[in-house]
Image 1 (cartoon, rainbow, N blue to C red):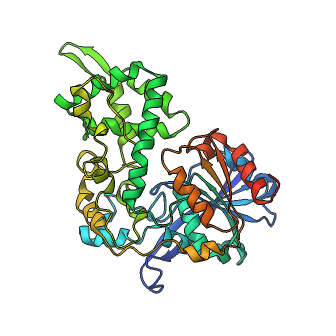
Image 2 (cartoon, rainbow, N blue to C red):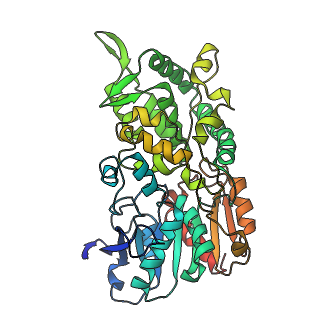
Image 3 (cartoon, rainbow, N blue to C red):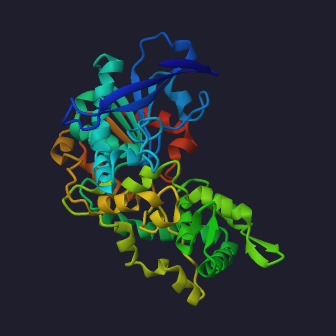
Length: 431
């Protein structure tokens, strides 16, 4: 355990050991990392704890510099634990380099099956008494972190003082097919809004797609294809994403002695945006987070996409319509074009075929909930369906929603202290 200071804050790095399989507590153990944050003037005070669960799946907790964003508001009254969920960040990371230690693809898939919200919550419940002395804590869940928070309410509400959710109310019973069937029309609306804002990008996207259909491009081992280019639409779910996408597209081509080519600047920006090197669990586990009804996810996003032929880039080029970007979806081709995922293709196939997913949510327990819960639901959120979220909100006793179009899915990051302040006021009945 080590501590260090930033302006206005003291961070302490903590490491915990938890069972890989909570049903076998005497078996193999893994490490889970958390970074404690407390206001520098309150480091010696007995403060209530707030547990932060990051979005994803597959991302470690954000690395803050001082009291930036919402953390500055949180440490005014809490001691905060920024948790790297199992397999992410410094918590026994799972990636192409480490997973071969488990054995072959079958062993890797069996290992990763224990990296969903159910086991993340069980990790939290082992960690909590070590920090709080057994007292319940407040949980702040962003996106997938909100999915984990709903699991927490289902499985261990006794550990919770209050729950704050931002952009992360999951459907309690939807199959992955239902999730993506609702997602593609939302993505199409976001793309239409982008093209309305930047009409010049319609032709730019067509030109880039046409070039890639003839010349798939290798950038540092990462193969850029039309589908990979379309996946840049994931940027459209953030508050400034449309502008970022526009600026990325504006310098796509450069004149060379050999003719017009995709610029190095563009290729590097796309490679950085599309690479899963820093968060491979996002690709491996993205559909598994919806598995709970003995049905395989079976590359749901890929199968459901066939129901929306307007997303076929080659067909779009045959006419004069726009090339549609896609969003937060994972496809088999990701494991062919990305060097961080390529060695894990067979593991991903086994996870997609898996049928023994345990249920994640307890509808009866949620209907009898006694924990104060508030949730920011973003109007037309590209990543988490608003309709699904509101149905879940109505299923959790006492849950209060703040439905807003002021922010996109990254509202907690963009709105910072204001968003957290609003949620804390709601949970206390002051708003």
